[in-house]
Image 1: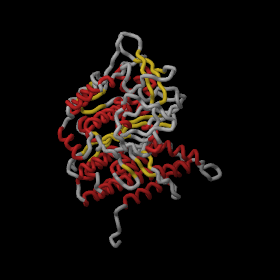
Image 2: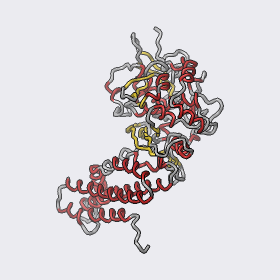
Image 3: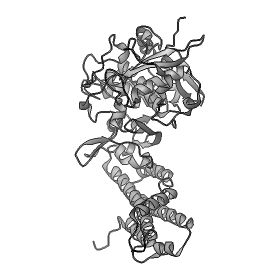
Image 4: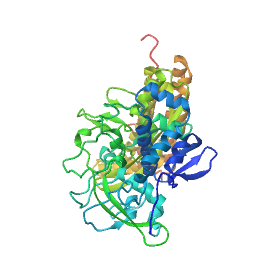
Length: 516
């Protein structure tokens, strides 16, 4: 029986239209009708960002752009040229078929002998990974339909986690895992805008060094052999379509096309020299003068990284898409008053174990980009917020130390630390500030210097008020024994005094004495 599932025509990209309708589209429709689509969105953040990267590879191959002027022409057109896209997809049509005998999409046609594994391995379902990420596959009976298989295959090549025996060498992290950070996507009013905003000017040196032979993986007649000494990408197209694993899907026997098992072995291993070069990542320089990708912290929201995401300070590197949007704004190609969104995608791993994945968004007012004074105000607001959070924690820590003091007059430090962490988490100080901060982020650029100073003063008062509310709520839940009362009200740096002193310092910021 001839089997085929061609991604050019067959619907597999989950998306919502501008009228709210949910649907799936093939590659031709999702690109030709991108201006009619609100967004690509899957339950898995990894699938969502991996599909965007696949579409960006197709667009880079067909439209460049080679300069900001070329980018501007694409943007002003309001849609992607359907003739260019249809001609390209027709030329390479057979390379997008999951079942093509010679060039199956994102697979190896011929592999060494290997034991087949369940196709759900593509969803990061394995013995050392809890299936807390995608419960569709935890309970689902095999086999999987081809649209879901295609989604998972594309995401897996981008986010394969190392660890385990393989050929010709053991399984290694994919590039997006080895970088260790989240990926930033700039989101516009529709999918066309989103794709354009993340379509970087492409030359031989940017976004990464590229050779004349750089192509997407599906255009290569001969696939490269895995090299344990690591492989250098031919360029950005090769990197966007990097094959971290050699996969061969095995159709399930039956009248309807399904996939239940697959062969899977180690694929390409990225060279260490690639370094801090992922265009969608955020890099911060550490004390060793090394740039490290900013990653998700389970207890830290994306908004707390807003200054890092928007600033081009010496010690940090904003995503290249944000840097390019700043250039477009400076040249008048994008309006300063526009607000897009930033979306972050990624997961947290420890060696071969996956802890969690996440998709977060925050506003992106273009006014901040390249405006040092405005960015300094944003930094000051964040510093006041961090200081208030520390004030709440330190006050709770002092309370915990007094409560855990033994008969010899010394606190049990381990017990105090555990108690303080538990109480601080219960208060959820940061969760109370996320929505107010989003409003501040959009309010700050609307005023002059005096108005911004007043806004910052109001913000400091707000974070101190929320800090005090958080602290009081925690106290309301405690059994006020004599020892706890001592921990709260002791003159020798009891919890209440610790909090009052710290919040007073925050409120005094910017209030210089009249004779200073």
